Image (cartoon, rainbow, N blue to C red; front, side, top):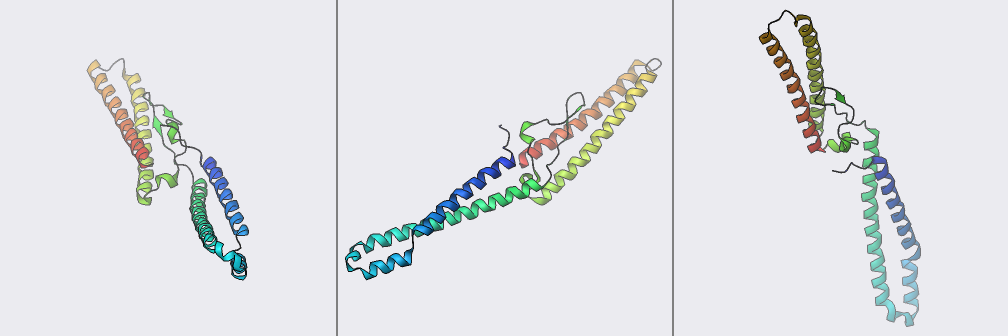
Length: 194
């Protein structure tokens, strides 16, 4: 899946489209002075033969103006949406690799995950952010427990029976695996929400 384009790149493209549309609209409005042309046709009996053509041309030009204005309104709305999106902070996603080390940028296509894109439903987005925070806390708690257990295991390695050491190690590994599974599930949900 290709990485999403930067918001700033999309914004520049849309602004160029808007400028082009504005230029086209201005050209049409300046070149077609409908009232003056209609007066000339009415005053010149010889020009009446072309009245049908003139009416069709004016109608076509008017339709073009309306279509351009609609396009410009749509482009303006997209530009405003992108500008709002750029002002909001990007959503941070915490992921760990198999060794438990936190990865800074695990997915290229999450580089530009932004609140406005994920926020198709505001409540869902807030819930996901809250869940992300909670899961990060759980993950760090698991990591802390793991470090404590590692220290304790090292201190008791010589005098603890092998069966007890195996149970301790299994409990530690299960806790870390559960935390990583929760984070993986959250990341899948975030990617689907984009």
